[in-house]
Every structure is written in C-alpha cells, then in structure tokens.
Image (cartoon, rainbow, N blue to C red; front, side, top):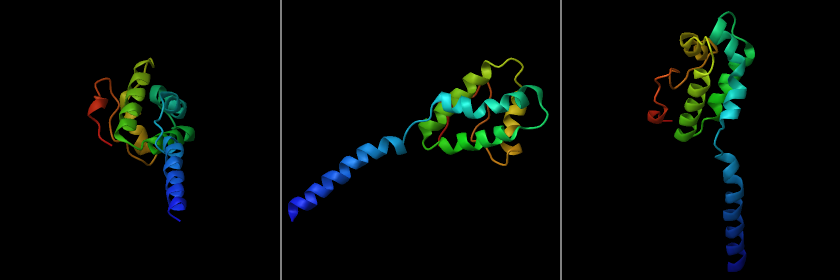
Length: 118
C-alpha cells in the first residue's frame, strides 16, 4: 500500500511541474502591445475611446499576476509609448478611468518600473 501512496505523490509532484509554467507564465511585450494597440488613436488624437482599447486594458491588467509581471508590463508600455510620435501622456493616463478600471502606475518617460510592487 505504501508504494501506491508514494507513486501517487510522485505523479502529483510531476504534474505540478507540467502545470505550473502555464499558470505562472510571464506576460510578454508582444501580448501587451497587441492588447493596447487599439488605444493609440485615442492617446494621440483624442476623441472616443475605442471599445477594443478598454477590453485590451482590462485584459492586460488581468495578465499581471506577480510583481515581475507588473514591472515587465510597465517597461513594455513605457518603451512602446516612447516610440509613438505625438503621444499625449495625459490621455494615456486617463484611459484606465475612462474604461472603468485603474492602473497601478502612471505612464511617463520618467516612470521607474523597477520600483513597482504588485
């Protein structure tokens, strides 16, 4: 009977190694970029906030599970924003509220993503 229990314990432990990487997977800049690209027209020109922008903001926030995820997302947004000519940071930082949510940081060229805690 002891060998069945040990075998079961080994199976459970091994399955954790298979499942855990998917549960705790890091977010990628590609994911963040894809989700937030619909926000660019509003961030540059103003006007109406596209529904795809709001859903992208909410989905990108839901991907953040750890402090490391938060810092990575922040760096991706910061670097991406820096490459968009005419980007209005005030509009960018208004977006979460306009979409009915909040952001744990403000986007700006001076944001120190390394100090964020999730």
